[in-house]
Length: 79
Image (cartoon, rainbow, N blue to C red; front, side, top):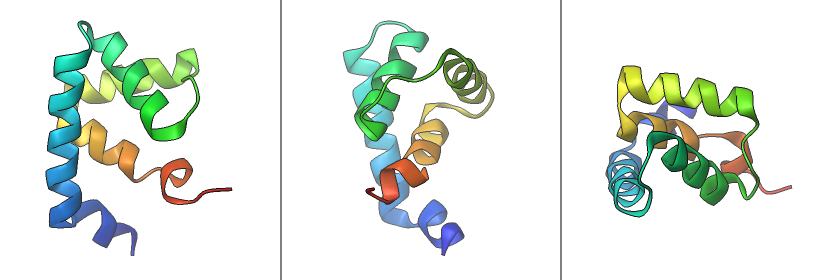
């Protein structure tokens, strides 16, 4: 089920569009991470989370980071 969500065509398209939105709405990589995390989880990212996401985006690209965020339990399941 997790792999299905991660590799689903809809999810891939939405991840790319989310990455495009971040590029338009935030000027720096750190601002993009903070905005993305806030939009997906509804909370502020911890400094350690921000650092990890910046490293991930640098290594794998913004669409991959967006796909990762859209597959977080905090996004998929509402408590």
